[in-house]
Length: 212
Image 1 (cartoon, rainbow, N blue to C red):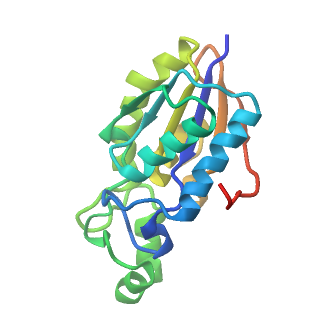
Image 2 (cartoon, one colour; image 1 turned 180 degrees about the vertical axis):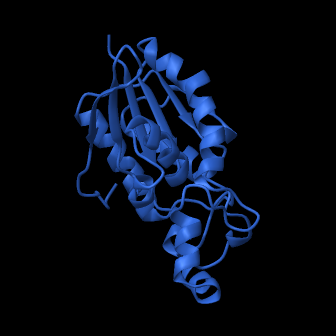
């Protein structure tokens, strides 16, 4: 039985481009972000992947990425489930701030700690641990059962919500997760074993087609 789980971070957003902390704010994709999403979908289609169900967050950049990927695969009708549990982590008081301005205000070390530590949240926001506390139960209760039933599952979400999930799938520690960066628009393809652990993982990457 195939137990396919594909994770994809949304394409570049307008606030990614401007180097702003985004969190639960809801900017659109840039033209490059649209191209990244379309290219990811085309790449998956060319490799013969198909999906039975897709999960995404309540934020537009992830929703549009999901829709564009499925459209490029010729599967726009696939059931797509939106869940707040898959939202990006809430950056609290940092939301909307330029990252360089934040470093000038609080210092490189403090901002890096807020961005990359496991359990230290920014003021008024969530840590990665907090994000994992909503992502992982949703994965275990809602997404994983469908994978284990043999459905082919796509999850289009965000850098930190996916980091929380990859941390568990890849067996990373609270220290090693700090260096993990999930690129926009690059699918991570997992095949799971019958015991729900990872049988194989591949990263599908190619040059972005800017003409799509």
